[in-house]
Length: 210
Image (cartoon, helix red, strand yellow):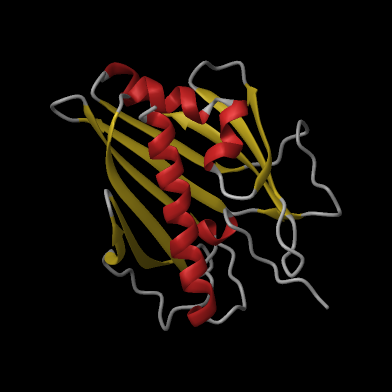
């Protein structure tokens, strides 16, 4: 039986199916649970194809530096990334950027996949202690070459927006999209996409508040 090409993290990245047009749409709430709200919208891709963009928002009792420390913590990476079997961080010559490699082991009916992302803290964030934007995108890196036994997730773009609030709260906005699409019907793919993003963000929030 041919495996389905979709993963827990990939479903956060993929446009699981095509929208009817390529006109940018406004974000719509698709799920709200506890402190986390999930939104989605459709945007035109680089070739005019519709691309799903997901957004998760929540408040957490933490600060900006704790988020950066968690994102760059190899040992903690598999605790909040659902089904991740490998989570590696490679530092670059710049203190405000790093490379993140993640591999996912999936159930029998799914392909195992991996991704390689470059994270960069925006220059403006270095001058503002109360706001920070961390952008990330797919890259090719000789440190983490493609494995013929894995499907490499590419075309990923996103960001973490961190805004310090009163009373030691931090507002986190997570955005992610990809220029890749899948062939799985939406009535199957959408619950997977939404539920796994929620689990990932919940785990991330819980680790920050420990």
